[in-house]
Image (cartoon, rainbow, N blue to C red; front, side, top):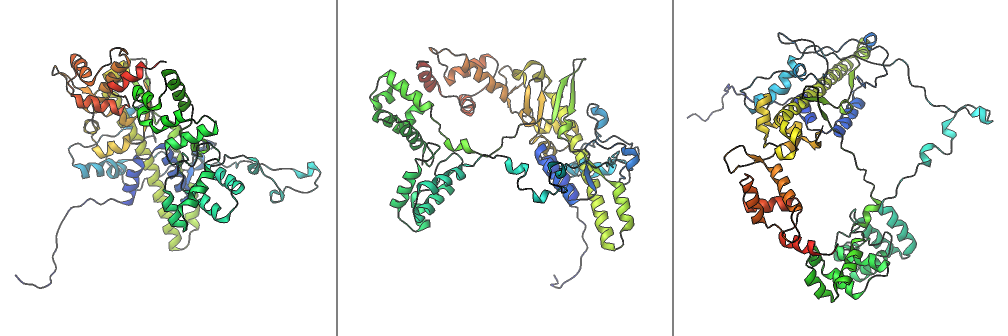
Length: 521
């Protein structure tokens, strides 16, 4: 064998993920809020993109439709950007029998090449919105409008909630005088979580600031009197203690109760009464006082905004006894490619760099519009098949939810499992049974005792909850008894599975439920 350098030619096949294909795949798994942010970012970067706000007077006169750069296949017909109800016409057929890599490529890259000229029209508005002006001459100023001279604006009058950190810093500057103590207090505030608990040890603060723990303890003790009551606590017991002290309700009996919160969590009232040396009436009063306290006082100043869940797909019953599946048009970004502006600017471009930049913007904008259109079609296609598979659930309820996996849906619509997984992530569907995440309909199967059709794990969990809710206080169901009842109903399930489902639903054990239901109301 000669050990000399030489040239060799080899052929190999590999899947190359183009940036456009990576973008299309990324768009699939974005939620509607994330997609809106992404599109806004692209509009800022690309001057050829604009939002269709519906104010265009005559889009047909303003701009010509976007031209597809790729040649259409035979039989390619023009189609509207997104039919919402006619699913058969909105979805294209895919070639089955491909492997994972080829299927992924077929679903997106080749599918875009098969699309004909997109029917996307520019709705650029000629009439600009009138800006609000202020006529200062009518106010007796004798001058013209000048916003720069305004001392106050509308924004300056808006109020905003203070964060927990701001509230504590204000109290720190008023209550603590020493410079070093204020530094310690600021460090403590920076180490509080959103609930108001101290997340690090006093030793670590002392080591970081180069002081002793006694001084840290002294500052912390002062700060534990700040509002809201219970803030700067190191654990739940201390948080409750601070609130009880603020209400002047902290006594030896309730101090013993706070030292035995584990017994309270287990609902072991007998052991708890013996530890606190109180009778049933006093114990009930102390427990009620504990329940009236706030275990997370810092959340009262939380600035986090809760975003409501907006469905991506609507399912409604039609007059023929079937289901009508529609995309939520409010969650679909209405993005247009301004081809007229592109034509005007490209005609005046002189340098090679300018033309290259415009061509890149045009191609990126064209691809983004197609990617959004294909994303909507894919969501509609998956949602349609899900409704078809879970028809019994929509008609009869959760007891008839079928076991389902990604492969079943992927095979039915000739797509790869990874594509279905991305489509069902962070997407919600509004049905007559309620609002669900698309992934809710994918559950594992539990065998039937009679050898018939398997049961959905979610339906079994619902049945376990029903049995426990209906149990009598004098006859609490053990996990073994629940197994027997389920097997009588045709569900073959193990005891450890019942325990796992019960714990996942945060349902106490039979012993804890017996103690809890024996307590006076």
